[in-house]
Length: 438
Ligand SMILES: [Zn+2]
Image 1 (tube, helix red, strand yellow):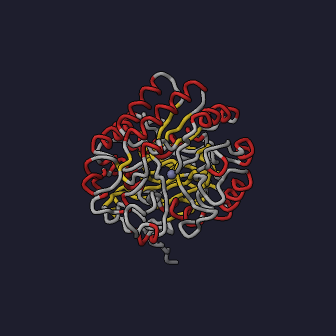
Image 2 (cartoon, rainbow, N blue to C red):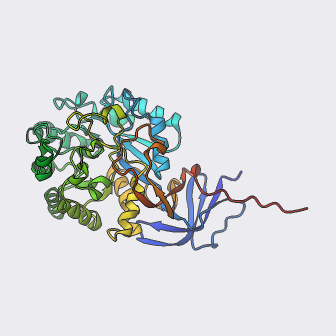
């Protein structure tokens, strides 16, 4: 074998050139060697990957995933999480530190990287804890974890309530050019709430988490970023005013980025409906006005990344009273389909979607992914935009089933995925083998 591969007959979606046009991709030794108009590349003896009728995107990047290993293997493992990622079209995922033990040391970082190497398939980038044990008291071993391979630090799942600690993190991470990913919700203001504060919570008799709990923390962290010159990434931004704060800060040159989740882009607090625990997450689903503001921010680039916040939980942790249920939902296998729905809804065009699910998050994390540039690793996601499918959690590759999108009809899904030029996922319809009669 020559190690040459021609991805032929598809539509290349290029987030950098902002184009979507017919073209082929030539892969050599795991890297993109050339792209060109259909039939123009000198492919020689290259093996062929048929992409007729398919979109060819730079491999998708999910910068906010909980893989649960080590410690919570009954919810997810690195192996099942990677399978779910590939089925969802993701070639790279960044995994949060709230495992058991917490990823607050080089030993745990190395463990995750080693398990991911054995799992094979998608690339896994660990995110280190900001504080030791996620306790919010002392900085974790950030330098040591950086040498071991982390791409960001975060106490995600828990807000950093100590502003002085957050300030130190924003200062110290500059030595390594690492972003600080903030889960911005003020715990005192959230007051143990389980859904968005407002009339729906009142009607259901549930305690609310107010929008302002997020907004004061986003404002605080922007102020600390401005003063330190650090780099802040706001995870799962969910309110209109938080978006406004981020937009204004970016306009005056503060190094702040943000991500939005599909659930915050599609669902409102009404989804809690009759106490559906699959609509329970933190920050909570908000109002229609917040959804509209988030969509506008994803469209204009204020929000550079769409991330799933894939948070697998066992059924026993969701089949309980709303107050008691775990926060979070799975998302790796529905994010692309919902992203394509944003395209259908006119919020984004295809190159912009490829940016929010690729170049955007890759740029924030500083990982070499998300483009079709010559010489980069040939991570490609082939999408059938016409394939209609119904979300059915029982068919997920993930170990967990907690999705609020069960039964949704979506158009478009990943049908083949290449990582480093290797076809690691293939769900294309079987091509009939032609035999030449002798
Ligand atoms: Zn999370």
